Picture 1 (cartoon, helix red, strand yellow):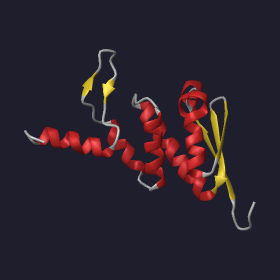
Picture 2 (cartoon, one colour; picture 1 turned 60 degrees about the vertical axis):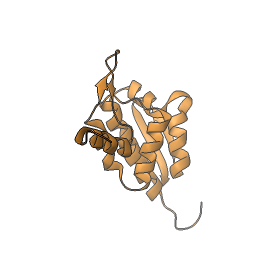
Picture 3 (cartoon, one colour; picture 1 turned 180 degrees about the vertical axis):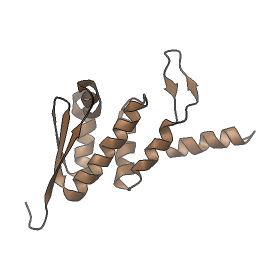
Picture 4 (cartoon, helix red, strand yellow; picture 1 turned 135 degrees about the horizontal axis):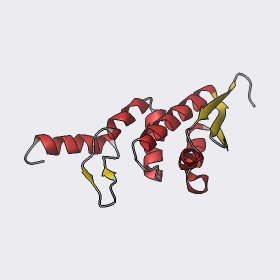
Length: 135
């Protein structure tokens, strides 16, 4: 470890093992994306997730996990594209914008799942469609 770089640990307590599994993803693919993006290490013990890394990396990874939890609570599946978007927003300091994606839905599928915009650009496009007869 180089001089002057402090290490931080952040702990998350999630509501269930299913939520922890969703955050980590199939074969830990979601958490690997997070680890690579922010240079952190993540460990799951039951319903507790521990992040270890630099102060900045751990803080950004924690914000990305918060975004992922927000999406999960609102019924959005944590697929690779969604996780990458959460990581991107957390990396640029715009993680609070993920909440804008959860409130609005376009339709309900036959299985009862809401169809929502996955990015802020898609949300703006849906808004333009609703406001204008021709988009």
